[in-house]
Length: 622
Picture (cartoon, rainbow, N blue to C red):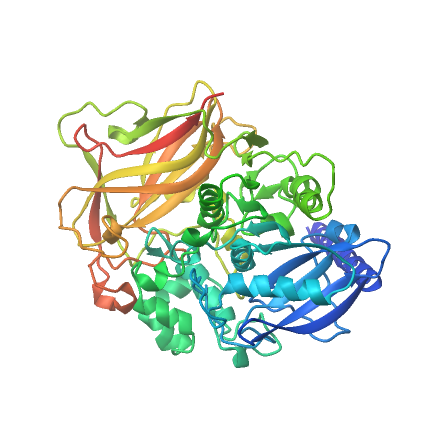
């Protein structure tokens, strides 16, 4: 046994050394082929933004400007301090661009006040009316007038929060802006990151703000190491021991994280959150746009899908495409895309994207590359079948909407329930014993990378719990592909006055399958906080025992259930600690709930002719 341990340790050490060597080679290439300069670029209101510019030493041609605006620091301050990577992937650096990184206003070396998801100003009347769109415009204008050897064209790219800044930069496009790629962009922060249909994303939000939410003067030289460090070996137990949400400030943040304080004050979708919705403002876009996202993104899946839709609706005739792959948050830039958690996709999907899509898009629009771009309206990875699909619209035009109904005895079918008598299944939801979001024990600082992979995890651990209802079809007789959003139509009741409802659509592999025998792989899952069933702005309690309809849209999928597989739906009322615990006793603000408000309730799901709980899915017509 010791010899095997030694062998595996040696293999691991060799792999680490190989990766380290590749990183060193890339850093050496950048130093020898690029010159770095630092500037304070003035905005229209006089605020100066710190900007690092990397220009190719080769002057045999002129180069386009590729910009990334970030709240996470441009790193390596000092003209002689180089970033080890200055582009989405190394082929960009070999191709040659003028790479620009900028601290957004109020962050790190940039002047001004930082505002999380700064609201867009549609009607700018004076130079004091600034937002992220105007800052991007002013930065491009300055760069064109002060940077040498450019070809007069600019592009913007960014992942996650920088993806939001890329979207902003496309609004009222600067004439020189020719290509923008918002990747996993935040679009509306009530829906991205913070909440999923009103349910608070506890684990991701807590970890994000303990690393980034403190004031600039407290971040220090060790950033992004969290200011509020923890020694946690089990995040499920940590958050359970934490108790009510009010204890986050009491025990850890002590009121020092301003946006956490704001989130506490605004539990509903009020003007505070509505003003941070960028989607209505994605107008007057003249640049080409490529929106990128991952089907297994636990943070920003809403963002790319709805950014694409909004741009498509408001900017007729522009080049606007959508790319969705089998990736976690930003996985196309830091992983090969071969597998994720329990799912294997058959080949290195991220490598395909990097080699055939990402760089090709920017070369085409920024370098006048005359080769055929070959990008469809929607380039979507079809999970289950593990292949790329090309569509001329998203969702695809050739789909048929069908309803998948819950039946008695844990059955699931496309037939409407026929029984006239009221039928239902019930379970006890206890907030002191919540259903975990993952079977894996999460630990490490600041946040376990594995916590971003549970969207692709085998769900058998949950199906075996008494507080999780399970419904499944017989084995399918032929392949069935669904493409587009999913409509959840639930008929429920609770013995309490509030509850959450988590719906999971699952692909069940045959018991005799060569790989993943019997696995219940998650296809899509979404929580819904019941208080918001009529309005996200004006919540209301349930009447105990009253049958109530809940209707909401789950985010899109592109998935094939293969012949011999089963379709499964799981329903539960907790998903912890990815989602915070609902006390299940209605309180106006869950952030202010007391320990005594957390009560066990009996929840029921109905599946009769009068109250047919079902999912509406779009079946692709081959």
